[in-house]
Amino acid sequence: MFRAYLDNNASAPMVPEVLQAMLPALQGELGNASSIHQRGQAAKAALESARSEVAALIGARPAEIVFTSGGTESDNLAIRGAVEEWQQRHPGAAPAHLITTRIEHHAVLHVFESLERRGHPVTYVPAGPSGVVAPAAVAAALQPDTALISVMMANNETGVLQSVEAVGELARAAKVAFHVDAIQAVGRVPVDVQRIGCHLLSLSGHKIHAPAGVGALYVRRGTRLQPLLLGGHHERDRRAGSENLPGILGFGAAARLARQELDVAAARMAGLRDRFEAGLAAAVADHEVVGRGAPRVANTSNVCFAGIEGEALVIALDLHGVCASTGAACSSGAIEPSHVLLAMGYTRAQARACVRFSLGRQTTEADITAVLEVLPGLVERQRKLSGAGALARSA
Image (cartoon, rainbow, N blue to C red; front, side, top):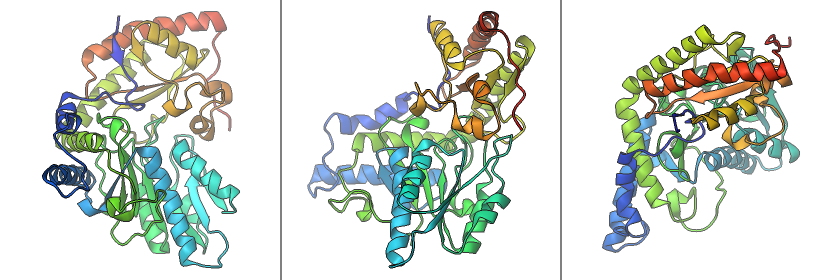
């Protein structure tokens, strides 16, 4: 019955090359990378080789890569670590001003909300109707005591890309630290930390077909952070704790594949996504592709269908062998509609009528055909049960 997995923004299935790279660590052939015996040094060499692969994927130096447990930890380390470092360098100063956007992943938003409760004034820059945050709005939010700007590169729900290079120029001119959550961009569009001009950039393994439970944070040389975890001297004193060697080896292999195949894979996924959206246009009335007029990563199509409940449609698709989602996997089961779509001007009812389809390395023409065979009928059935609604957004 299984037809298609189109939820790669939640987690992209591990590919054989990644599992093969992990086997030496999984089968006990390697020791602890901090040990000085032969197995320990073999582990250290393998870990550093993986670090080089991850660094190469984003144009960084290997020493600038800190391995973490995933994107959430990377975001937390970047934001909390940078803010605490700023406060330590400014003893006696009031809590620093911070800038982020309304459409960030909760791994970023909830950290800023926590810092706000601790007294840090935070400016949440809005997004326009297409999901794009204007760099000019970020510039207008800058204050003399701004310590950090955090803007995502690609939105996890809509795929819309932000002008992070322009924000990087603003941050550089203002001498403010700049963090980029690039978790949904890496492996899908070129990511070059030198061109972006960021100080910190978050990555996650399982978004690029590595295992879950491993991620990385780029920390530009000379950028100081206060660590979240205290213990040994791992990761150059930036993240204590024995490294997840199997996960890191898989991450390194996935990064190598992503770098080698980036142009071809992006063009192939764009073709599949465009075919999917063209098929919907021909078969389903009264729907809207979120952010269609804005630059997007090639693999993501978030579609709002008038007159349906997104969660019910996802369940119906699942019963027909198609995996999709209503938005961020971390928010599954949440009563509240997507904060991203609300920030773009959708009403609560409209936001609940959206479903995200996200493609991956393994997605085929047959997958798209299978989805288009069942989706129009399921939408029509739901509309008959509930009655069609309007897609017009609030002003």
